[in-house]
Each structure stands twice: as C-alpha cells, then as structure tokens.
Image 1 (spheres, rainbow, N blue to C red):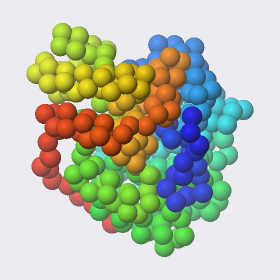
Image 2: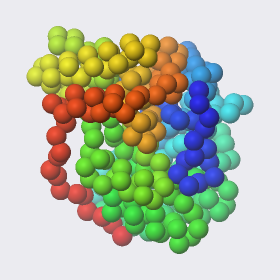
Image 3: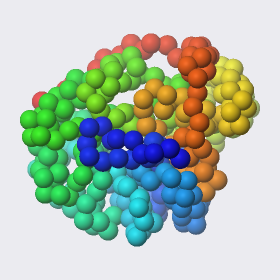
Length: 330
C-alpha cells in the first residue's frame, strides 16, 4: 500500500482509499445492498483492510440507526483505524423535519459514545437540507474542531455552490473544509459535469467517492441474465435493467482486459480509475476477500491512455446530464 495522502488541507492524512461500513452492525429492515452475512465476515473485512494498509472507515449515525457506528467502534478499539462519521441535518431523511444546527454537538457526543472514542478523525454533514443554514452548521463543526472532538470536517452530497459557501464559512474560522463525499464512478460522473470535482480540486478539498463500483456493476460479476437480487434498490435501479446490463458488457470487457495486463481484477481497475481522477474511493467490503481485493487497487497505476480508453468505453453509458440544482440554504 502506498503512503498516506492528505485529507484536503487538514492536518489529517489517510490511506489512498477507504472502506464504507454502512452495512456493518446489527441489521435493520432496510439494511442496504451488499451487506455482510455475519459478524465474523465484518471482522474479517475490517482486519483484512487494516492488514493491507487501508485505515479509513466511513460510517454515519443514520446507518442501521447507529448500529454501524457501534460495530465499527468495537472493531476499531485498540487499532490504528481512522474513523469518519456523519451528522444528519434532518430526521430520517425527511427534509421537512430538519434538525437545527444547535443539535449537532449533542449528536456528535452520541456518535462518539457509540464509537467508544473521545475524538473522531472526520466529521461530515451527511447531506444539505434547505431549511438548515450551512453557515450555522459550519460554525458548529468549527467549534467541534476547536474543542478537540473532531480532527477534520467535511460535507457530503454538497453541490459546487454549497461547497464554496461551506468552505468560506469554515475559512473564516481558520478551519479547512477537508472533504466532500459524493457518488462518483466510471459510470456515474455527475461530479465532473456539475462543477463539484473542479471546485474540490481548486479549493484543496478531497472528493470521497461512494459507490465507486456503481453498486457492483463494475465488478465484473454481473452479465445479462445474471443480475443482483439481494435488495430492492439494486433490483429496480436503472443500472441493472436488461438493456443497461447489456450496454455494460463492453465496459466490463475493457476493465477485464486492462486488468489482465496489470494482473488485477475488473473491480480493482474501476477503483483505480477513480483514484486517477484525484478522488478517494470508499467501496464497501463484505468479507476479508473483498477487503483485500479493494486494497489491491492502490498498488498499481493506470496509464493516461488506459484512463482515456475506459472513459471512451463508458461513453455509451454516460452522457452529460441535465438537471436542476437543489436549493442552497445560506
């Protein structure tokens, strides 16, 4: 595993990829796709990651109603694991039931208690809510840094305008905005088109990429006639409809071919592609085997020709989207 990389312009340094622990812990009715099958598998994924040099683990207070934080805290006790978690500025993802910024300190204390820690390496705002002031949230994050409960602060699912507002608000307090966590993969490239990736590079903010394997579509496991059946979100998403799976065949074949030249898997090449864009992927890991495979993506590089070859192959799937930006709360 290569040396650590800076987390934005914060004093924190992390492994060049992380692990998404969303599905770890006691399962709830809506546990997301690709979850671990047992506590033993979770421990194997955690230990396999650490042993391979991957030390950054991402969770949130919302994941499993706090169960992910509890489990990650148990596994990380006495290790060099670095933990990122998130504050939800609304109740149960309902934007019409916002949590005012003044609730953040109490929520942070609750997360720390579940994690069994006195400080967290990265504390993020999980998503923007129109009725909750970004400036007020950033003020609370800055307070948390100054009290020593948080080492670095970030946001998640923020637009370019929201990033710039958050960055400016924190800068006024002498605290850098370390990261913005958004969906990003070879198939989902909205951050390239909406200005988010460019703003992150300009401002020195690390883009943390969740779903970097597009829910497994880039893993090489799924072909026409063989699609996921484990959870409603994957069964019903556009990615795994018959026509889309058919159109993915050429992309997966290029991932496999490039992987062979590096003695790597399709999934490792797809993760490496994200890294080559200057982003830090945080794939999930359901067991030790998957954890070690993920880590292997940080042990090689792609040539610029290979990066562009994959970009060209994905053109059949990726088109510059047209959408309306969500409202920004100041």
